[in-house]
Image (cartoon, rainbow, N blue to C red; front, side, top):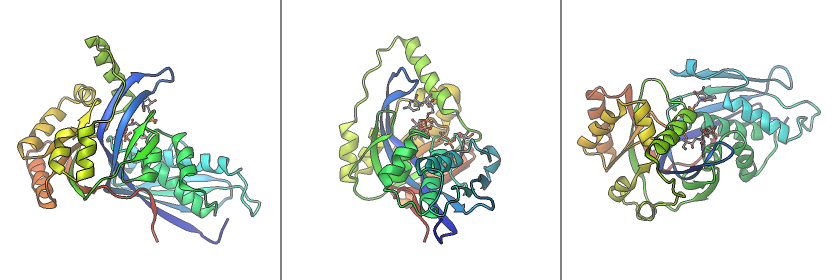
Length: 313
Ligand SMILES: C[C@@](CO)(OP(=O)(O)O)[C@H](O)COP(=O)(O)OP(=O)(O)OC[C@H]1O[C@@H](n2ccc(N)nc2=O)[C@H](O)[C@@H]1O
Ligand SMILES: Nc1ncnc2c1ncn2[C@@H]1O[C@H](COP(=O)(O)OP(=O)(O)O)[C@@H](O)[C@H]1O
């Protein structure tokens, strides 16, 4: 252990600007073109030296704490244990690595905004500092990919294209800031269930599943910082599946569109819906319209892109 006794990391949620889902692979995953965009909705993870060396514990605070497992299945705990294994289990002081984690949760749980992956990424960065490992971020991203497909992006942040199962990342140059509104839903949607429903819908339609490719219009909109063009290019192949499993989301999307959103989309596997606004004021207006229509549990505004997981000084 180093002299550092406590490290706090702030980590953003994501929205998928394009989620092109390719064929189902033999390993149960789908090849993707996943355009990730980090937004200013953050969880915080604090890593503290444990009372007993070699133990891993986790506590969760926040409105949704009861929906998050506070045991070894928590993605943050799994990430910390994976890092300890990677580092050889025993620190330079001869004591086994261990950590007490505290998660302050603001990212909706099972909401399609990768909150669990964000916590795993934050735990990797926090434990790396707590244990004095000093691993390069790329190495943490590789360990993160073993925990979940979305974990590497939470370490990278900004805007990036993910290929493979979403873990192989290439940053995308983007100009300016985009203004978002997120309509949070009651309850979550299971990611494997939404992918399964996508496969079922495609099989029923007898569709040939195309190899996923990045949308050039979307990339150009990002390079130019053109919110209107970006709004028109937003696309999510999981949206029909999320709507089939949660039909009420169709009305949420319609209310946002009718209120003038530049783009309206289910975020990843849902059920959070994302709306692109023309400005911060416009985002506040959209948020008010969604709340007034009663089509969401709450509406929150955010900006993107923001950096990935960062240690709080
Ligand atoms: C859909 C997306 C979009 O970014 O995220 P969410 O919207 O749920 O946050 C991701 O693809 C979710 O990534 P993540 O939540 O890390 O998934 P993983 O733990 O790796 O996988 C969970 C399950 O999702 C399915 N899965 C995931 C990724 C992928 N490329 N193909 C898949 O089919 C598989 O059934 C897998 O067993
Ligand atoms: N730290 C964590 N935060 C949120 N969920 C977690 C965490 N660890 C494990 N989970 C489990 O992972 C599931 C998916 O969580 P989350 O990442 O929030 O959703 P999504 O994949 O839709 O973005 C949750 O239902 C929860 O049971």
